[in-house]
Length: 112
Length: 113
Image 1 (tube, helix red, strand yellow):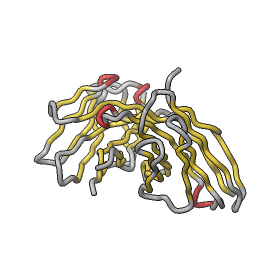
Image 2 (cartoon, each protein chain N blue to C red):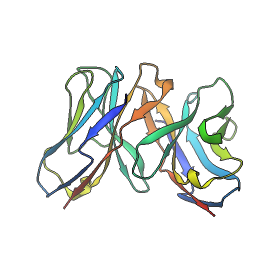
Image 3 (cartoon, rainbow over the protein chains, first blue to last red):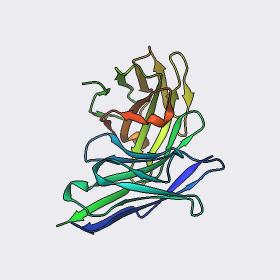
Image 4 (spheres, chains in turn orange, green):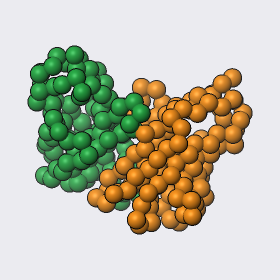
């Protein structure tokens, strides 16, 4: 079975600082990986996805993620945090049968 | 607006009561899913339906049943609610191409007392 592990349940950054949210995956086959964002009291929205076309993936709202096979990682970054980035972020891997398996989530807090 | 609609948004049940969570999508998606979200545990798959007329268990199916009524609707039923089922429930749907990603509803916050 495939799985993802998100390191750090809470991350706090200052406005304008680098955002780094960590995700490591476990998969016996080349994985398809996703990052989703959940704003308070809302459903999940797709931020970006890795589908093997390119190792550096750009998403919405200035976020990007780099797939590193050697490190089994797919960390999410943004050069400069904005207050509106405060949300919970989920890394997910696509499992056989078109099922998404989610990590535990990381809550991002942005300080002014 | 096109998307996934869940009803109700909030519900409080007493232990032992039953209820059905409704989900409908208008994007002509084949696959639909029910997840529950609990703090520190992410989203866990309860049941899914790859196409109309089929349903399969996910990671945490105990205490739940589902019905894929037609291509648009996928309901989740709690026959005898327990406090452990207090959670936020999300319905999602996806196109045949799994790489497009899921579309999620806004969730149902259920409290069982």
